[in-house]
Length: 338
Image (cartoon, rainbow, N blue to C red; front, side, top):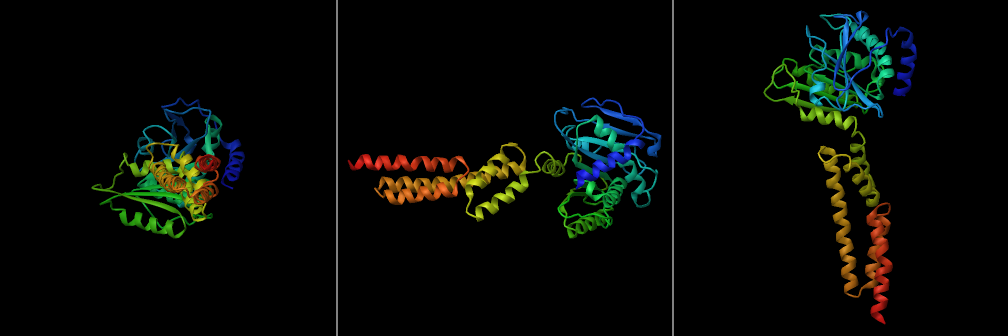
């Protein structure tokens, strides 16, 4: 549904998109002069240093604080200049948040289609965020175009949550605020509101900071990773738990191993690896029981254990190992009886 909406927006905006933007070099920030955008009349496009056109890339629209300049901070910094296209946006009206954010929503919808034509943007992975005034504006724009955004980042700001059409159920939301920030209560209100509406909220308090952002936040970085390139890891972990309950640990093991293989350092991938090891250890314990039973000349018992392992661990190499062992065990027992 979100992708269909975006395509419609592209078609509607094509005639009003204005001049085609230039080519964007990887690892560089490009300034796009656009008087109709309002404010200082330009926006910025940062293309990650690891960008290649052969795959789709997430994009985050970034709003600056009150009286600040158009910027790609802090998202460019949080991600180390990699992994995500960042668009530093200007406000339609400078010095205040536009009424309901409607003018800013129109700006976003207007500039996205030409960017999509120039860059390999994943239109299912569009994010919006900002600091201070940018955070409050993010909350307003998100409320008016919820279906457009894969995730929302509200920094040093808050609000009562989105009031526009669409659903927040399952929406990824990150709220970050300084420990002594004057807007901490507002941030906490946003957290409660988004949770009440069914969003998946990550809340971080920047220890020892006031009205500021931790641009080296591992929590924010991991939030981005969990909702972009590693977005299937968390669902895989949840699904594997259900498979184990249904006595299908083999399918769970394979799912967890595939998820773990995506990264050696990302937290959720490490968790998947740990859970895969736990299932493998359970298999090895029961496999050893079968071998011990065979050694004690309890061949029927050994075969029974192995057959259960074949059934439960079907779909992965552990099940195949147990299946291969059954005829070997029977052949060994027959040889010993002769």
